Picture 1 (tube, rainbow, N blue to C red):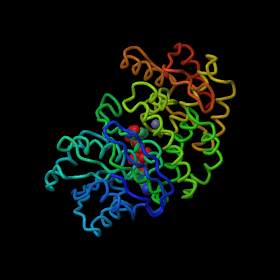
Picture 2: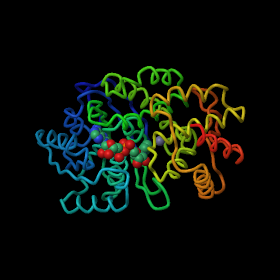
Picture 3: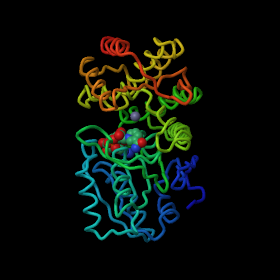
Length: 374
Ligand SMILES: NC(=O)c1ccc[n+]([C@@H]2O[C@H](COP(=O)([O-])OP(=O)(O)OC[C@H]3O[C@@H](n4cnc5c(N)ncnc54)[C@H](O)[C@@H]3O)[C@@H](O)[C@H]2O)c1
Ligand SMILES: [Zn+2]
């Protein structure tokens, strides 16, 4: 299921997966190459292009047109843009509509959009007639750097985000950085936080590269975006290849996310995921420094980059509600709130055990200071 170099390709990463590896191709102008990719990875299949209501007119329709012009049988399906659509309800509407349109086992889903589309359309593909292939075409920085790589799909439920889903690795991922031109600058910033995270846990050089090129990426520059996306995908793919089903190493990708998720929830999701994770990384780095696990000065270095990505992070909500969210999260995980800590920039702390328990008073103290002085 491979294909030769695409026109506009900047590079590709082959991701290993138990069910068969897949290429992640990054470049500029790649949407025009989707028919070639679909012929290689989904020959003869009927194609269900799934996009949200914002991305469909901007990019999804063009992908569908290109496929149609290449002689493929295509239908488009959309859903209202936003995290609020990542639900079982949207999943049931989309699968019903595909069945009504006569899609069968010979289908392939083409998911064109941000991380919500990646996860929702991926989950549709994972479950439709017990599973059909999905071609991921991420159009947000976050979806390119993070969501489309690793095969996790799913929906949010009342008890929490991403709690119902499946591992369903894509047949291929095509990340066209030209699509980022229409993405709002603030959304580019939210996604870039995950690139900073990849550098912080795995690769100091990448951390410095992101720092050096972030203004260009925030401005939508195609070359800088392709470089940063490609390097970040390579790092995430390396982790996923070694621990596809999150038994160990893959946990390091949660750096900043234990506190970040609590801040997101405490703000009733007014705080963007990237901003919450940025504040979460600062908090967890500070915790590590105070425990003597993380090199002194690490938090300052993180802050100097993150400030330029998302600005001064002012978590809304209160330290109190973040704390109460952390303790309910802890209950949900059988009394274990776990934290990924850094040894230094470029290296997560731990060998084998990648998550650490932290004394409650220390967490409380750091959380409180976060609210008073971000
Ligand atoms: N599966 C995973 O491993 C994984 C990893 C990280 C995040 N996620 C998930 O990703 C989701 C967040 O992703 P997101 O931030 O991309 O959200 P999103 O898909 O909602 O996109 C953000 C906004 O940008 C718009 N948009 C997307 N691409 C655009 C473009 N090119 N031009 C103009 N507008 C565009 C969307 O319509 C939306 O309004 C969360 O649900 C999160 O759980 C999944
Ligand atoms: Zn994240």
